Image (cartoon, rainbow, N blue to C red; front, side, top):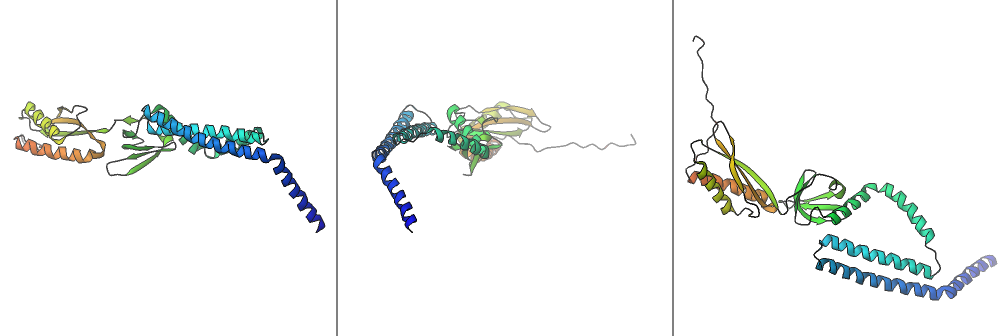
Length: 274
C-alpha cells in the first residue's frame, strides 16, 4: 500500500511540475492555435469572395478557399507545437510512413481525388454543361473532388467517379444536345417546299437558336426521298421536344399535301414456259 502511494505521489509531482514548468507555454500555444484558426477562417472566406468576384468556377473557388485554410491551420499547429517544445520532425516522418501505407490501401480513392483536382483546375466542363462519358449523358449538376454528378431529363442522378472521366473521350455540348431525325417524302414532292415546311416546324417548336438547324436530302430510298433534320434542344427537355417536333412534322406535311409513302415492293412472276 505504501509503495502504491509513493508511485501515485511521484506521478502527481510529475504532473504538477509539468504544468508549473510549461503552463505559460501551453497557454501560449492554445492562444496561438485559436487565433490561427480564426485567421484561417477569415482568410479562406476572403479568398472565396475574391475568386467569385473574379468569375472563377464555384467548385474551384471553394477548393482554393479550403486549401488556403488547411495550409494556415497546419502552419499554426507547427508553431504551437514548437511553443511547448515538441519537435515536429518525428511526426513528419511518421505521417510519411502512414501516408505510404494508406496510399496503397486507398489507391482508387486517391486516384479519384487526383482526377477531381485535375477537373477543377483544367475545367473541361462546368456545372450546366451537357457531357457524354463512359456511355452516360447528362447535365453536370455537381463537381466534387471524388466524383461528378450528372442529371438527365428524367431527373435521375448519375454519379461517376472522377478517375473514369479524366483520360477518357469526353463530349461536351454546353447546355444543349443534338437531335436527329429522318423523314421520307414521295419522289413527286417539291423539295424546296418540303424544306420550307420543316424549317417552319422547327421555328414553331422553339428549338435552340444558338446553332441553326440543318435540313437537307439525306438519301434516296426505294420509295422516298429521305430528308435529314439536325437540330439542337435543351438537354433537360431533349425527348420532350424531339417527340413534339416529330408530331408537328407529320401534321405539317399532311396539311401541306406532302405524302409520306410506305415501303413498296414490286413482285413479278415469270412464266417458266417462256
